[in-house]
Length: 193
Image (cartoon, rainbow, N blue to C red; front, side, top):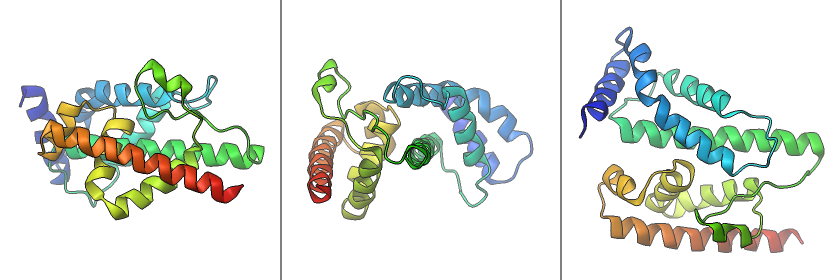
């Protein structure tokens, strides 16, 4: 573990213990990673999205540090929680926009990180959220892999280290989860037609 990772873990534990000043020291150390996560999320949104990456980062950070009931164990837990909160903020934002526009157009949420994603159909972010919640009930580890990979922007190797499993297991869980989510979302689309 690098000294930066050690520092983040140490400061998170200090925050859990209520040490004053730990939060002020933590933000500069996690900012770049939160920025990377936010940039990844914003690339998936429609052009002209009203929520800006900096505002997203600050909202995530405020929600994370204001949670008094979390016993922070380390940076992996922190960044997994930040990915989940980012997802929830964007889902809430999408709901507000849809409510405002009464079903306006859906945003593109490709599961692939390659150029091939452009050929994938658009996914309703609310349907994706619902499918992810079902997946979490069925297979917690697969839902963690999706959260860390898709929403957290973590690499296979980073996820393997975070979850203490092999990279091959992460790849297998990611592939299975993507397939299940696609089927679940398409089943929901068929049910609404």
